[in-house]
Structure formats: structure tokens, C-alpha cells
Length: 182
Image (cartoon, rainbow, N blue to C red; front, side, top):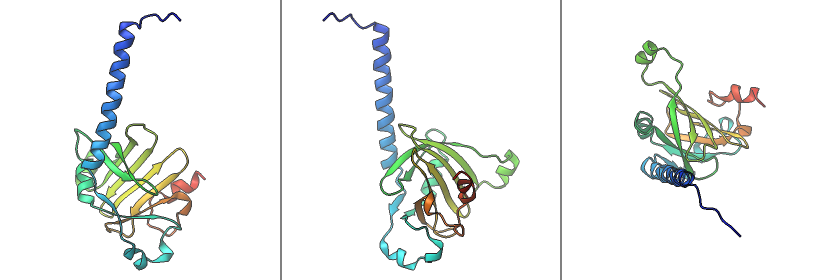
């Protein structure tokens, strides 16, 4: 078998791509551990929930919204961590996607809209809203979409559930949009 030598320029490109990819993977892993503001919640809250206003199946979490807001406002590294639908967490690089005029945004600095993709693979797309009622997210995967939102207005407890378990009377701003696409 006769192997020809690798073109030096091709070799450099391959090495640079490998280094960039490994750097991106390690950065996303660092971001998850450095930016952990979610924790799975104890089962005792489940007994206190109004069963008429909860999804059929869900993951219940507690979140420190102040730490999450700080991550959203970091212009040097705008990465947040979100829970997976059933388990685990993943890093998302976000960017501002507000449609408010600058004057309106200055008047209401507590309202923010963002879009993002999972690190390092870009397999998940995310839409996020933050306001005085809490944090709201819709995560779109290859198989489904799922929601993350407060159990009740202003709560630090959050539901995380598949769109098929959404109920009309839940406090979910994405409900009507997702039902139109089904």
C-alpha cells in the first residue's frame, strides 16, 4: 500500500479543528460546573402542588434566578445551564433576541428574551424569557420540545416537562405557540 504524505496545510487545518473542538467541549463542561443554579427538588413539595395545574409527567427543580440572571448578563461568555427534560444538565450559549425598542428596554430592564443553542453540538435550540414572574424556556430537540417554567408566579420551584404533557390552564407563555405546530 502506497500512502502519500499529508499536505502540510491540510495537516494544520486538522490540528486547529481538533484543538477548537476540544476547547469548546472543555469550556462547556466548565460552564456547567461553574454555573450550577439548578437542583432537583425534594419530593415533599410534590405533595403540596395543585394537581389540576401540573403537567402529567414532569421533573421538579429549584433554581437560583439571581445566579442565572448574572450568567445571562455576562457579555464575555453568555452561557447558561439548563436542565434536561428527565435528568442531567447542559450548557447553552445564548444571545439577546429582544424585540423591545431601546427606550422600552431601558424602562423595563427586568424583561429579557434570548435564543440559544446547546454547547458543543448545537443539537438543541432554546428560547428563553426572564421577567418579574420568573424564568421561562422552551427547548427544542430532534425528537420533541419541552418547557421549563415556575410552578407559580415568582416561585423558585420549576417544572420541566415534555410539550405533550402541557395543560391549557398552566402558566406557560409558550403553550399556544407549540399547540399550533402539532
